[in-house]
Length: 431
Image (cartoon, rainbow, N blue to C red; front, side):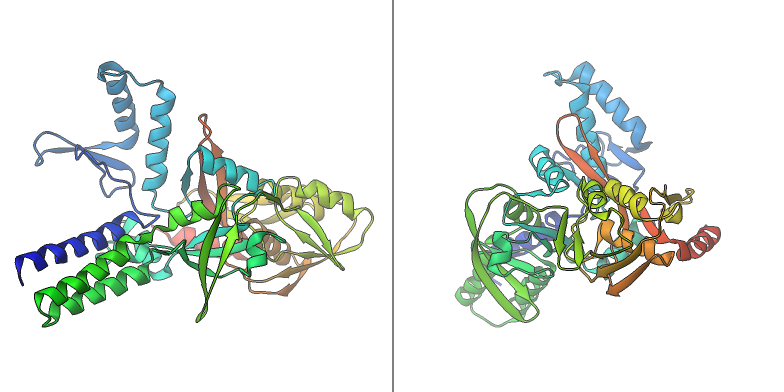
């Protein structure tokens, strides 16, 4: 292979490697100056000495405390405040969890997230989520537990951007977007994905093995690298389509084997937590949904609640909704993968008369809505129509930081009453 071709080949490989490393939303953040090497352990970091052969393994808590002391005492331009350093440490630790549900958000992102929890949306009017390859995600979890997974390819951890909810009457709804659609391009830029990286890798390998002359090979490799550099990351796409209220974008999406596209303008829109549709009441677990539902219950003895097209929702509101419609009692447990004692999901039982509940669900029922449905179903207090649900039963804690940024953190998975015996048995045999 000629020298020029070798350089271009290396150039193409470099772009693909960068994409595999830096676009995976669950991948670890790494130091850019080379002085700090984040180790493989979730509980420790490795502080490198001047000699690369010498390193000291120290607990994270001690490391961050000592680093703050060092910066405060010796840094040429004194940091504005310990608060800024602490927030930076929090961001690093949240990212290092390598969990797709553990998300750090800057001030702008967190403000939009908080507004959405009140039913106030911006962007094109769709909630977007990251969808990971389940096999790759399972390998990642095993590696984080120290189970020695060697064949985990970082490129398989690039998530797809998938529509998880649509604001009724929004521009996204008018354009024809539906739940489950995968966003594949925005404004002419292809959304980087595992499938795309694997395809480009395959093309590079084919070119490498081909008998093309230097010019033809250069053209092929340039075409491959151009397609890569003209792509955009999943995180940028999600931010671009869900933040802001002005401008429009050409969005291309995939549904099964069909591809659609449309120009979709951004706007601000409000999604009411409670909307009556015929004989059913559509419920979204936004802040205040419990108060809205309480005003509609009165002396009703039967109620049909539609839980389809649900956002992740507020888990604080979930608790209030359970108190509102369910008799006092235990409805399940919040179980972690550690040996910690599970937390019970308990209704305080505000309602004194029985309520005949019917819940309409499908794969768009997720998060707080899904936990609500499973909790009531486990106690045979609701009839379930439709299904199955999304299978997203993680309980998410939301934390606001002093500078306006914040993060979400999965604190456990919900197990209905009927599953708690199984959960206890698993904990008993767990080493």
